[in-house]
Each structure stands twice: as structure tokens, then as C-alpha cells.
Length: 178
Image (cartoon, rainbow, N blue to C red; front, side, top):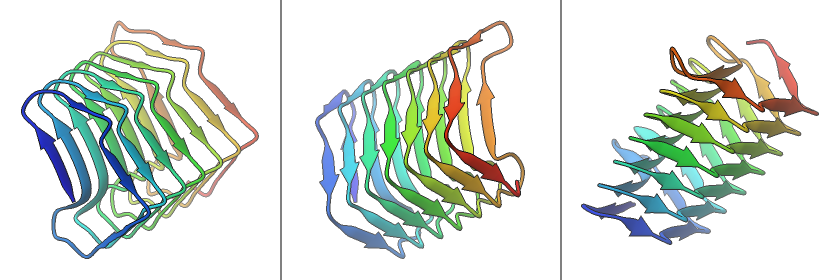
């Protein structure tokens, strides 16, 4: 399933569907500039090259993934922006058995106010959860979630070389066997 725009893409939604066994990405939302208010809800995404990929050439704002199951893909969930990634929310989802990263949120410059709650991330080939910013990483919150059995790091929060990591909180969660 592919949503693609050479410019901006606003309010793209994939809801209550199953996408499985594709050699490429199961659900892909790609904007040449800004990706705004993208939503994936109630999706089952299994056995694809990658699971869910939301990508913005410039800014990714207010992306939401909820109530979804993402299993047996390359990367599980990847939310990537060339510049700023703000307000991303992943909730009540299961991400398991992916051969690369379970959940990856990346910003070329600033990652702000990313929230992961009520989710289980298990059996990832590398990081369970990776929140990465080229410059500043602020306001990341992980709560009521379980991260286990990752190939390398359970949770990785990163800010760029001269950037700042501020306001990060991990609460009410279980992190083991990583």
C-alpha cells in the first residue's frame, strides 16, 4: 500500500486492513516535502520487506500509529524525516520478530515529543526502539510498554554530536533480555 507525493502529503490514513507478504514495504507513506497527520490504525502488517514506513523529505508532523500488529518484516515501524519529526505517537501496538529495528523514529535535525505507549516490542534483530535526531531530541516519552529480546539495544535515545537530549522519560515499562 503506497501513498506518495512529490510535494506534501496531509491526512493520509490506512485503517483496519491486513498487508502481508510483499517484497517491499507493507504500508508506505512518502512525501517529498512534508508529511502531516498521517495515520495507521488497526493494521496487521506481516512478512513484508519492511512493515510501516512514513517518510518526509522535510518535516514529519503528528504521525499516529495505533492498535496495529507489525510482525516478521525487515524494519517494523520507521518514521523518518529529513529535517524535523514532531509529535509522533505509537500506541497500543505489537511489534515483534522484525529482522532489523522494531520501532525507529529518525530526524535529520530535530526529534520532538515522540510518544510510545501501551506497546510491546520484542524479538527485533537490532534495536527494539531507536529514537534518533541529527541535532536535538526533546520530550521523548515511553510508557506502559515492554521491550524484550532485541539483538542489540532495547531502547536507544540519541541526539546529534553537538545537540541536546532533553526531557526524555521512560516510565511504567519493562525492558529485559536486550
